[in-house]
Length: 350
Image 1 (cartoon, rainbow, N blue to C red):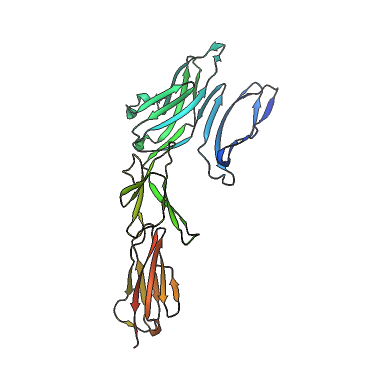
Image 2 (image 1 turned 30 degrees about the vertical axis):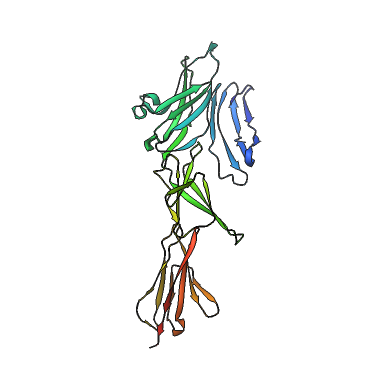
């Protein structure tokens, strides 16, 4: 955006907020402010555009940055991109430039992307040995994309774009650039359960990555290391105790998520072991192999009802009485299932 102050002295320019309704109820808001400028001066305005769900404005989409100056502008389709190691990424910008400078026609001489400088000059990625054979420019109609293949973690950087024309003063560089982060998928399995209808419960597994590349991802689900589905979400009507699940991203199978499974039958123990004397202290411990980690609950079986005692992995009986003799059991439960084990204790009177 270019604004030239034409009034005498100075003017105050008010940039109005524009709100556009987008799909899925998203709003796009443009930053507004007041700018003071002297007459016949030129205002250089950089602005960002981003989306946010109404009521959750603290969670924003990647922003689009536009830099405009004297008829020049560079805008990036996204200011932050995450991509997987070994994959290919496209970083794109659009640009404008004045058709005439100093009453002479303007011709674009060169456009290129860079991440560093040498002797005060920007280093074209095409000439950087670090990117040899891995960089391609796709540029036409005032739009330029740099495609980087076989990504490495060392490629994480801020990528900037510059325009050079045949005029000595005809140059503009997109100052903010695009931040590229190259990482492994770092997948996690998330859970959602429906228990509203006891006769028809289900569990939904979803595959999540901290890195969300701009391209669509193809997921693979595994049950006991065998492929069983190719969607981000995987529905389970029933989970067997011996079942395990994990997910991966197609072409990134070497970086699977952690394997998730229901709790194995718990191991229960009493400490100290051996004869239990009245008046002593006794600690009952429950442990189970599970992922996600299990939550534990201790119970005591009674003649008429079951008594809940503790929701910790350990339950301590202090100054134990002979009436504390009986059956105790613990349950281990996570999002995929539940398992239990019991222990009998007998308290001896002195």
